[in-house]
Each structure stands twice: as C-alpha cells, then as structure tokens.
Length: 302
Image 1 (cartoon, rainbow, N blue to C red):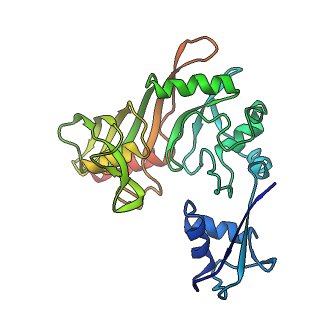
Image 2: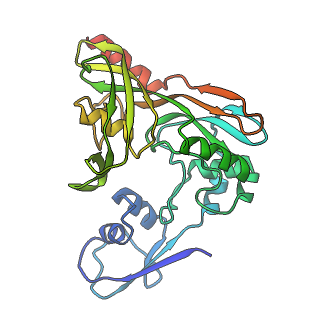
Image 3: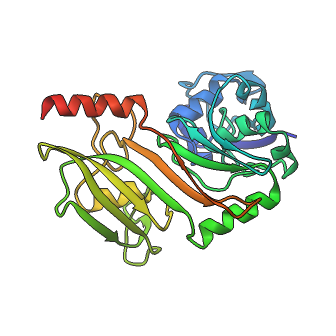
C-alpha cells in the first residue's frame, strides 16, 4: 500500500516549498516532480508546484511504491563488468541514484534496474536496500557491486565493515596539491553550519583519504588518484575541499565549471572477495566521456 502523508497549511508559501519542509530529504526539483506527477493533491485535485495554497487546507502526499518504477527501469541499460550467481559488478553512470530513501520514491534508481534484471533481489525483501552493499553519490560514476541474494549481501557488507575492500577513485580538482602525494586523516561529521552538508569536525567519525597527483594542468587544476579506507558520507569531496583543493563541478563542496555538469569524481577500481569462492577480484572502469572531455579542455588551456 502506498504511503500517505497529510498536513494542514499553516503558512502561505508555495506548495513545493511546503512539501520540502514536510519531506526534508527532497530537493525543490524533486518536490516539483512529485507534484507534477499528481502525487500531491488538495481536495483530490492535481495542483501546480507554483501554487500558493490557502491557509488551513489539507494537503495529501501519496508516495509511490518502489515497484512502481520497475517497469521504467527495464528500459535502462547498465554496463555489467562481472556477474555470477551471487553478485554483480557494474559501471554506474553519473546522475543515477543507487536507491531511494523511504520518502524519496520519485524516480528510477539503480535498485529498480537490479530488481528488473535479477528477480532474486526482490526475494531479499521488498525494501529500499535489497541487494545494496555500498553507495556512490548520485553524480559520482564508476564501479559498484550489488548482491543478488541475502547471504551474498551480508558477506559483501561485512567486507566494508571490516575495511577489507580496495576503493580507488579519480578526481579532478582546482589547483594542484602540495605535496603531490599525501594522506588526509580528519574526522567527518555533520556540518554545524549547514545540516545538508558534511564537514571536517573534531567529534566526527574517523576518515582517511590518500591522494596522488596524476596530471598537473599548469597548477590551475589537477587529476588525482584517490584511495579511501573508510567510507564516510561525501568523504572524498569533503576531504579535498578541506585541504583547499575542491573537486571541479561539485555544487556542494567544490567549484562549478561550464565544461562538466556534475562533480568530476569517478570510482575507477573496486576490489572485493567473491562470496561464492572467497577469491579476490578487482573491477575497473575507464573514465567516462564527460571527464575525458574536461581533461582535454584543461590540457588545451594549460
């Protein structure tokens, strides 16, 4: 059964703003999509995102079910890097959410695609985390693994908990770090000045990031190889920003640039033990076209 949320309008604001206040995990654009799809109604009538509702009217939000997006997911192709009876390694494109949050069932996610392609994922449990082992941010591309059954999911997740995986990324940053190789060992937690962000904070969780400069574009920009042992929320983005070399294109922590429309961060390699055999395997993904074109642009400008 679809989840319903009801509230009474107490302040005269645009309806998309009111929706985000009651569902704070949604952005304004996501709230607008929910409204445009008819999932937000007043008096059982579809409304516009720009509406200024009258005071004391009741607003009803109907959140879709995860399976509502499974059919749409069947039309999306994902590059598979490895597959066996227990797991799959894949190349996630930028712009795709890994899974929805409880109140963010408004678009196709990687989980929907996996549910369509591998029905055993549904058998793990009809939840928003079935088969999910780890995450990449929506606008981060590259290698991920996904479990096909509960046992494989638990075995893979244990590797993350015990920090037994190998995680290597490429990032394009503003400036060129000095020294050109280093370790950032700084705790990460909620940004006290902005609850929607993470930050280096004294009482945060342990986080360690290793970086190495691969290409220097006249000290104005550089291509880094980055390894992480821990996997804190936005860890690489926060750490590189904290030492003064923010990721290009990162709208939250970095520096916008016309040549790329998302953070220039790519999961290049992921190493794990295969659940069925305990064999160590490393999966790799080449840089995506948007990062290649950005590098070519920076080389031409250097």
